[in-house]
Structure formats: structure tokens, C-alpha cells
Amino acid sequence: MSEEKVNVCLVSGAPAVGKSTLAKNLIELVSSEVIVADMDVLRRMYRKTTSNDPNHILNKSFFEMNIPEYIAQIHEFVPDALSALITGAQQTNRKSIIVLGAHVLPGTLDKIIDPPLEITQYILNINDEQEYKNRFMGSDKTHPTRRFSSHKDAYLQFNKAQEYQNALLYLAEKLGIPIVESDEMAAQTILRAMQAKSAHLIIVKRQNHEQTTGKDL
Image 1: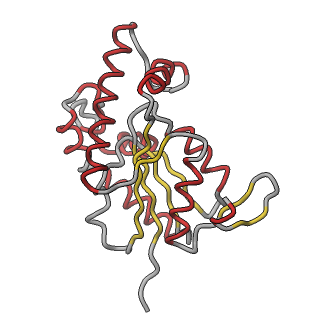
Image 2: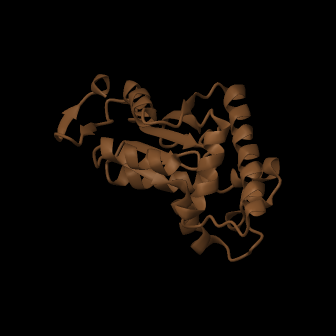
Image 3: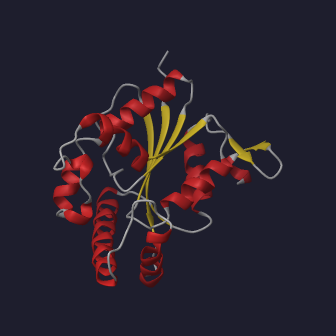
């Protein structure tokens, strides 16, 4: 009998594109059997145990690095972190995992063959550049680690974030990864796709606490 696959959904996007809001919306829709994980939290956990070296990739931000170099280096850490998360999910008999983060890049899980995975991946995006700029410029008031020293610094960081997002969109187009608009329907779009691949994803309508299927979303 073949081993049951773990259903993993990876959602990437640059800072301020809406990943935290999406995570909150997903948590409200799924049961406790589904793990919704923030890659930034996993990164901070690994940072405490991996290296105090300020030049280590875990202590770096793409705001201070060449984007292609950052993407290449972050691949060294992300698979190990996700592999540990998947192992933990298996140990608690949870078969569906959703991971959101700027560091969750296309191809992140390609080398993981045990356990077998059913992988879906998305790039979260804001099509309206002005809307994205407005969100980013205001994100220092809502994000715990994002700070702008000046208006000029805010614009420099925005340009870097936009460069990173464009790199993700290029990878998405090259590898055929769907792009999801960052709006109120994003969570439902992602859950439908996951549920189409796995019967283990249990969605819960919070308003009446009734179990539902993907077609009811």
C-alpha cells in the first residue's frame, strides 16, 4: 500500500503583498487539522539555533543583498525548515500544511521525497502598483520588524521589495506557477485548489461551525 501524501501549499510574495492577512483569513476557514505556518516565524526559530554570524543568510534581508544572490542562498535553509515542519505534522497525524512567506520560493521542496508530498504553489500579488506602494509605505506601522528611517529609506525599501516581487513573478511565469490576486477571495481560491488534490483538507465555516466541502467555499 502506498504511503499517504502530505498536502503542502506554498504561498510566496514580497513584503506587504498581503501574506499576513491571507494567513489570518486561512486560519478562520480551516480546522485545527490544517497547519498554517508563517515562514518568518520559522526563520526566527532557526536563527536562534543555527548561527550568530551576522553574515549568515538567516540574519540577512534581501533589502541589503543582490536579489539573485539572496534567492540562491535562501534555498539552503528553507527546505530543512519545511522538512522539519512536515515531520512534525506527520507526528501529529495532520495531513495538510499551508506555508506563507517571502522565502518560500518555487522549487523549494523539489528534493524532498520522503514523505511523499502533494505540492501546490502560488505567488501572491497586487496588480495595482499604486495600491502596493500604499500598503508598503504604511506597513512600518503594522509589521513588527519593518522600520523606515526616513521617507527616502521607505522608497528605497519599496523599490527593493518591488524588484523581489518581479523576480517571483518571473519565476512563476517560467515554471507555470499560478498567481493569486491579494484580495478577499485569495484564501478561498487557494483552499479550493488544495481540496481538489486531497480529501484530508477539512474546511470549517466559522459563522456556523458546520463542516463544508470545497464547492461550498
